[in-house]
Image (cartoon, rainbow, N blue to C red; front, side, top):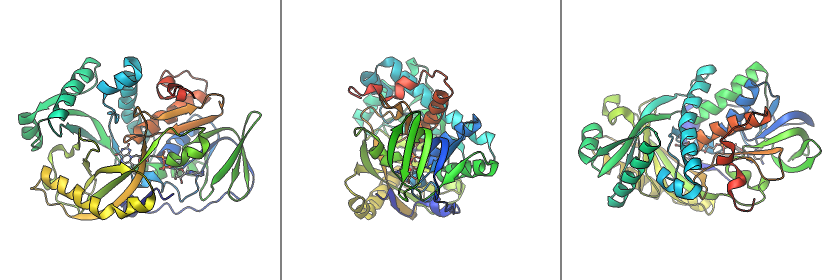
Length: 405
Ligand SMILES: Cc1cc2nc3c(=O)[nH]c(=O)nc-3n(C[C@H](O)[C@H](O)[C@H](O)COP(=O)(O)OP(=O)(O)OC[C@H]3O[C@@H](n4cnc5c(N)ncnc54)[C@H](O)[C@@H]3O)c2cc1C
């Protein structure tokens, strides 16, 4: 499956990590990580930092799956609002999921303070707009829930919203805890850093096509007929993880994004906030370090890559129109557009950890619109599990929440 098409900006802006190293000989390693996107890179980083020997395998060029297409906004808000998530998973787990996501933004920031990699991480405010009257009711409910549970939030009525952000809408929730970065640079930078330190092995163009559970671990088989023996295997294979899962746990979604030509910084909207809305699917926007505007949304259920790609031109027009409704005074000229695939789960939470009865196969599936904060949580949970450290977040994100896993 093609995970994206069109011209994903990050893959063009950044120099391609031109790395070709297929695994040619049988290998033994403590932990095999399948996937070199932001999830696999963060898992590898956490394990290397803890001194756990590991190797990353990817069937593609490094980090050119969904990570290369991501708009990489980091928000503590999960796709399902807290006030609804409480109804789905209970108050304790819902609040813990939100708190974990909030902490994950700081943890991503700290990862990139601890290594010589600068993926344009920038703290920005997040503005969650009410798209209509129904959205206003949701925001009122959501504001109370978040405030009650001490999550950072303020309520802007229509006047305050216009005064602070020049936006005409019924209301918005705002916080200053969000961030943005370049996900491709983050993933490739981390992997390069560990290659340089020689504490990681990295194999591109190496597809894992089969696996067998053995005493004390797994034996993986590559498309070239080479075997990898490991004590643990981490599945960071993104939206192609289905072949490792006993049953389907996610719903694939096609999504669209575009980036404008650069403008003078004075022409950008106030605070360069991340802006999104209550409508489903939602429209969202951010800026880039070179003063472009990046906008996305228009999600539709994924059927096949051809259908997703055929819709691209039409979706570009719709996204452009939405931007112009919000900020008609800002000159916006589309420069590049692309479509990608992401996945959602029934409760908006990712799946992290082992499936019941398979304790040495650890999933790191950061599903959802805020997949990157989940990738950070997955990396820490997996490291803690391998070190035997109890982590209260495990049950919030584990497969145990599925009735019959
Ligand atoms: C347009 C778009 C916008 C997005 N915006 C945001 C956002 O603003 N904020 C946010 O947090 N998230 C966002 N997301 C989601 C986010 O990009 C993903 O959650 C994240 O990139 C997933 O990273 P990953 O490493 O898990 O998966 P990927 O980047 O897809 O990496 C998985 C890798 O596994 C490899 N692989 C798969 N199967 C095998 C196999 N059998 N053998 C070997 N290798 C294998 C693939 O080749 C791939 O490189 C967005 C996604 C898209 C498409």
